[in-house]
Length: 357
Image (cartoon, rainbow, N blue to C red; front, top):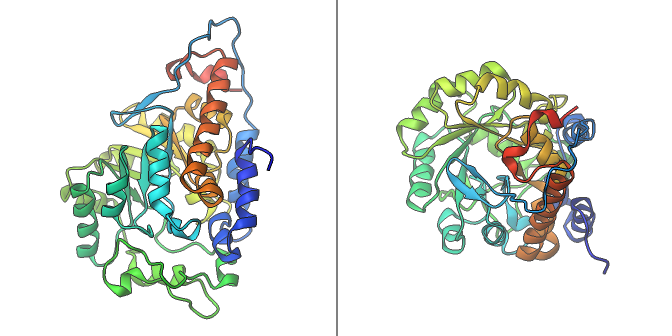
């Protein structure tokens, strides 16, 4: 087999190896998938104003996020049900992230439980949180994450209701026998059953997740944990300010990978507005559509501290387990290092807004 040389090729290989329902679950977006496609296309519309003769012979791709030293300004974004892609699921993904020296973010809806991930993950790890109508369930998840050594919470706030993901409706998405939302112990919380003519996950969200959250709930979450809370799903300046006022330690500019509100603007276009509103008070991350090392550099030039990458990591997992995850991240590292050199930057501190046109 020819060597895999970029993240797009991993997607094509993963599609050939995965069950259609599983691939469609990861790959698809909401409705006409306009936002899904625009998330990456918006990066292609940004051009780089590079420097020359900048003495870039020695370069450093590392940075810090919330005080964590990472080797690359990339985190593995939270994605549910990794065992749909590979039998080892989140265990392999977490090990791949740790080997790469970056932060792994575990989803509430992971197919491997918090405690088992901790046994194999030697690197820094954060926990993504959905808020359930049953606040006891939510509080238990937070307590377990703290006890298991997770060092931050990502509160997802852009799912008051489930987006219309038509591929999942056509496929009647459900978890195959033997797979559950492993962090949720009670059967009614762990199962995503087949629902005739509908997405089982959409039914799960409608039944169990809280659709009435407000900024007061961010304050409530902060009151029950010692961990820093990042708010994931912000795309406006006023919401960024609300997040800070509610005590958020960080903001993640995200539109859920184009899976919630179709025709929402691409995240890289929303990023500058949020960065300006935050004015350095907290760190800002961004996800959605990042497929090249130049995309990472562009996001940092527009004010992001780091980026989160989701789907490509899953494609690597599907193709070659932990080794595939590591290779996806190594491709990004190599491309980002190349972008640094060709833009005249020796490290992330030298990535400035004047590189963007």
